[in-house]
Image (cartoon, rainbow, N blue to C red; front, side, top):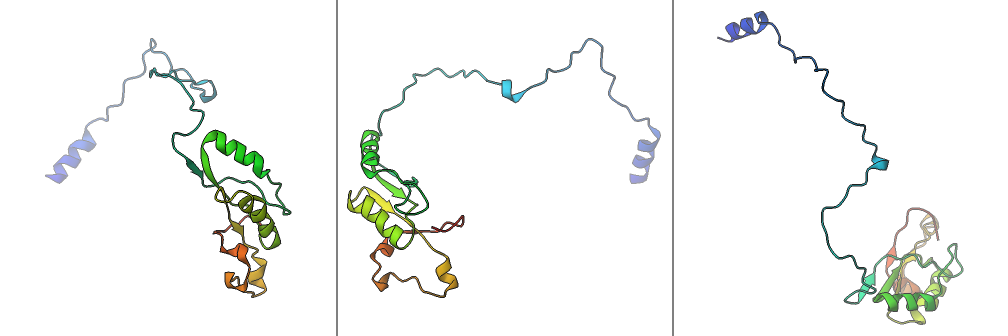
Length: 153
């Protein structure tokens, strides 16, 4: 039966699609830069001036004090946070060592409970085989530690 089906398939001529008719038009080119679809949804547009509930900004680069990043003034941050309803900000730019201590003093000590500062580990300490241990008396190390693979503090 299989041989018969193959034989019939080989003998019958292959039918192709009919040629395009002259009256059909080519589809227009679609240039995405010029494509601005019109929304069919109709609703009121409004931007709330502040969040309904206090929020936490979990990743905001505020910079560090005395390090390689410029920092925002904490008073200006607090003013903007209060206006937007942000209760607390996590700053991943804390730095390391004295820079971290200065950043914590500038933000966290000045405005307790409003800022959390993450350390940017100095990976050269690993090369020197020194241990990073918060029990050494470095109180700045008790804050959350955030790893950054794109440069040292």
